Image (cartoon, rainbow, N blue to C red; front, top):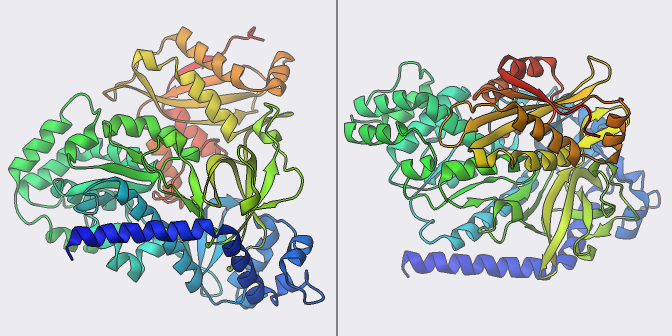
Length: 584
C-alpha cells in the first residue's frame, strides 16, 4: 500500500472516530462523569457533598456547588505545599499547569496527571488531521511553527509548575512526533532566551523556505510579533545565510550546536533572494513571498486573538487562516471541523470524551451590556443546549476540578450529530469600570471594530490596542491606546484630528445606555484616544515577558492594570484625541 493510500485511510479513520464520538455524545458524557465520581468521590473535597456515600449524577448536580478558581485554590495550595493530592483527586499528580490567566496577580495552578495528558493529546491530533484533510499535500513538507518556552517553577511539594506548552515541548511525545516535522530544531524551541530562540527559528525557517508548507503558533499574537522581529533583523539573518556563519550574540549552546547542522555553508543566492523580498517597501503578502509553498497558517485566532486577524491576512497575502481547536489550561473542549471557515465565523465541535461539560444559560437577548449577562435557571447538559442560545461553560475533570466555571461565554451555532457546535463570544471579565459603568472585553472589541472602519479607506491599519480607566482626574475617563501603521509599510500615518475624533465618537456611541447616561451627567469624561508609534506594543510585551509572561501564550492586554505598562505606552505616544464634549 502506498503512502497516499495510508494517509487517506488515516483520514477516513479520523472521521469515523468523530462520527462515533459525536453520535454517542450523551452516553460518553455519562461515562465520563461516572468515571470521575467513581475515582474521586472519596476525596476530602468531594466526600463532604456525599454524606451517605451516594455519588451518582443526581447527587452530584444537587449537592456539589458550581465554583470558581478561588473556591478550589485552598486545596491546590495545600497540595503545592506538600499535602497528599488525595484531598482533591485520586490520581498521582505529575506536575501543575500554569494558566495564562491570573488569580490575585498569580497564575492559576491546575493539576496534571499522566491520564489527563493522554486525553489532552487526543484533541490536537484530531484537529491536525482534520485540517490536513482539507489541504492537499499538507502532510508533506515541513512546518514553520514558532514555539517558545517559559522557565518552570518548583512548588514546595517538589512538583513542577509550568505552562502546558512548556511541559509539552519537553515530552517524548513532542520530540518523537510533531517536532520531527518542524523546521525548528528542538534545541531552539527549548532555548529559554526568547530573542535567541526567535532568531534561530526564523533563520532555520528561511534556510528551509522551499520545504515549508504550513506556518503557525499557539496564539495569533505570536505571528505579528515574529514578523516585526523579522523586519528588525532580516539584514542580519541574510548575512548569516550569505556567509554561512551564525551571529556571535547567539551564545546558547543548544542553539549553536543545532544551527551548526543546518547553517553548513554560505548561500549567497538565497540571501540575495530574501533580501530582495524584504527590501520591498510593502510587506503585504510577505509570508507568501518568503515561503511560497505555504498552504495555511494555523493559530488560535478567536476570542481576544481576533484583533490580529486583519494583520495576519495582510501579511499572509491570501493564505487561509485556520483556528484549529478550543482549549484552556483546565481542559480541552473541541475542534474546528471546518478549517476553511473565515476566522470570524469559526465554530468548535465539542468532544464529549475529554471532560464532563455543563452549560449555564446566559441572558443576552435584550441587547444589554455584556457584563450584565446573568446565568439563568440551572445548568444544562451538553446534549440539551439550544440553538442560538448563549451559555457559560462549566467543566468537571478527573484532575480535581468539579463544576468549575471557565468564564467563557459561548453561542450554540449548530450540531454535529449529537454534539453541539459553539462560537466563542467573550470571556466573562470586566476590563473597564468607572462608577456604575462596567465594560467587558466584548463591548470594547465591538466598539473598536466599528471605529476602525473609518480608517480603512485611508489605508491605515490598526495593528493592536489596549485601554485603561484613568481615574487620576475627576471625573474619570476611559483611555484607548492604538498602534497604527500605513497599509503596506510601517510608516506612521498622518493623523487627521477630525478623523481621529470621529473614531472616539463611534467608540462612545457603541457603548450602552449606562455609559451614555453617566457621560451625559458628567460622571464620566469624554473618551481619550492615544496613538502610539509602531513597535510600542512590542516594548510592552517585552516588559510582560521580563515579568514572567510567556511569548507562546501572550495575549493582548485589553485593559492595563499596571502603572508601568501605561507608562510604556505613553512613552510611545504620537497623538492624543478626545471625543466631542457635546455629543450626548
